[in-house]
Structure formats: C-alpha cells, structure tokens
Length: 108
Image (cartoon, rainbow, N blue to C red; front, side, top):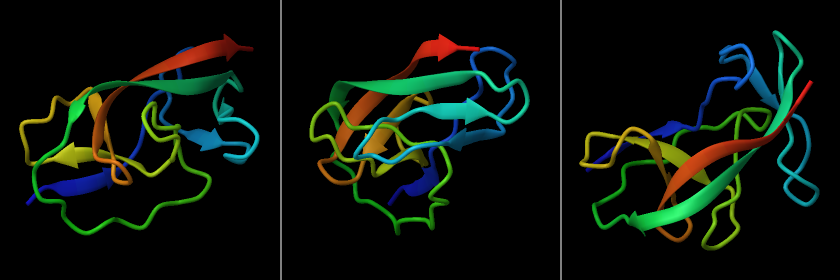
C-alpha cells in the first residue's frame, strides 16, 4: 500500500513553497505565491496508470495547491510515497491516472 501526500509545488519565480490556491475549480486554477505575489496555474498531462493499492486519503487544505486531472478533470490529486511512481508525477485518486505537472501562465 502507498502513502498519499497533499499536492505541493514551489513558486516558479522565487521557489517559495508558501503557495495558495486563490480561486475555485468551477472558475480556474490560479495560484498565488505568498512571498513574491507571482501568479500561475498548474496543468497536468497523463503519463500512465496507477495500479497499486491506495492508502487512506489525507486531509487536504482547501487553499492548498491543486490542479485539474488531464484525464477526468477532477482535482483530487496527490503525491505518492512508497511506490515506483516517479517523484515528479502525481496521482488522481478519482480515475487513477498518473500525471506530470507543469506550472504555466506565470505572471507578476
């Protein structure tokens, strides 16, 4: 069984991990860095399928980083510890897609 961790990523401008999700999934996936105030959006791309057994879902801060799944559109994405999943990939627990994540539309 694998351990799931909340999604996290660093600001593409200053590297801070103090990043807030500033919108709602029905609108967009705009994030803001609390240190330099840069804005950006995460995008995902499907790179595989997760076939191992999942552990319990962790509690997630609703203002914490999130992104839409490229396969199903859901935003229930997690990092995976304890499996052969690459550290730069994330898992959608809704459809079990393995995803790469890229930060786009970086602004001031």
